[in-house]
Length: 333
Length: 227
Image (cartoon, rainbow over all chains, first blue to last red; front, side):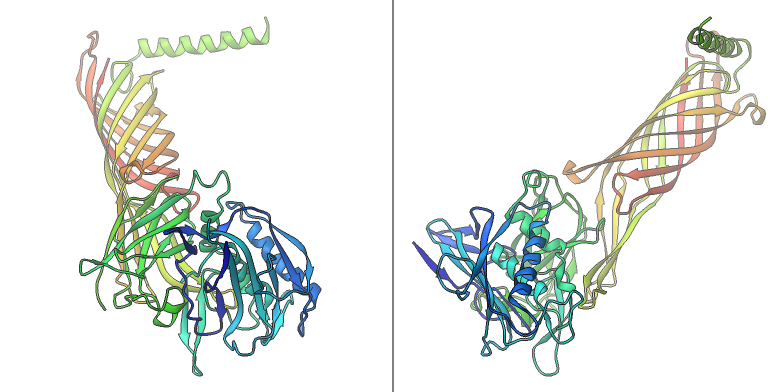
């Protein structure tokens, strides 16, 4: 009934891995010809941790750090998701054993992969059965409260990977620049689910952002959240034709928060869910060319030849409804 | 005599004095106790907040993607009032106004050089409230009656196609003058006239991107009849 599905879920130092992500914000799987959002059918979600320690991180440190990361997702008041530590195991993450296992694995061959999340999906329902996270012990790790120079913060990386574990895809709310030695460095990001990690020593990735909160709330809405939340949807075109892969950002001038999504079909349609009601400023931008593989199947043609632009009207997200289709025409660079 | 009875007597006495004054002396605003009026109210631009779209750097600093500055643009409203004179110089009013100001969000400073634009949306604004008006007889003339007033009420703002309603409160203080066009003591229609005023309108909540009060200047003009 079940088979392991390799969905991309990697947080990397530079270029992302080429496995396909089927959708932004939420993953989808095809079940009997229809697209089903990948999520857990029941909570609390039980997980186990391995007893493997690495320099600077004992097994107890590891358990505590991932526990804090799970607690951060659990604390989102507009979402209803919970987790339960089911014990310590000697199993290795990545095995189809019915246990959602988190632990260190030494993978020096994956020299740009800090951590990775994999799923076991019941292909008859699309429900998650198991999700494993491995942290690459080929990198230096830290659980120091204030971070540690030249070491990656385990809690920050765990927070990102648990986002995938929950069923979230990558967010493109971030800026990068090319590094002299190859790859890219993050200048800034506004989503834990941004696919490239902050530099070693940083602990800026321990706090969820509005984009992450909207995503988890959309996927597992709290009882009082769903009726109150709204969506913002529309269509991006260039030269009259739908544009695939445009990054659409909804900015809330009241809170300064940003939530984003992509146009996900050839008609150029997009939808951003999990939004609190209110006015929004809408910005449309092309993906950075280096980021494309972090979000889309490499076989998809993503158009990045257009100018960044803003919608010239204030878009209203209603309570419990949709903004109505916003038409956005972009122009080539 | 109980305390309650004494208080009632005092209130009745004050009421009697007010009624006697209103009847015995010409009111500074002219004849008539009930006033109906309709006109226009122009409310000036109101700054309602500024916010940057910031991303977080690895050191927990800010990286600004773009910046916004928002206001409710100046707009006219239609305005209607009912007033009742309680005493020679004192009246109470209920007022309603309806206008369609633009919500304007100016966007600039984009880090990827997007062209600066102003995103606009027309909203519907209802103001329903009341207040107190005090005539200043010492400053008036046979037809002119200066006054000061203050009040407040309920603010209801509807976004595009009524997709979202935002509510709040407003308060206002100001001053103006009435001018009698006609005055007919003893008739059913006792007076007609015009009124102009200037005021400060303070809005709280409703369509606003920053907390606190947002103040706008306003001027009004109306035609009234008194009975």
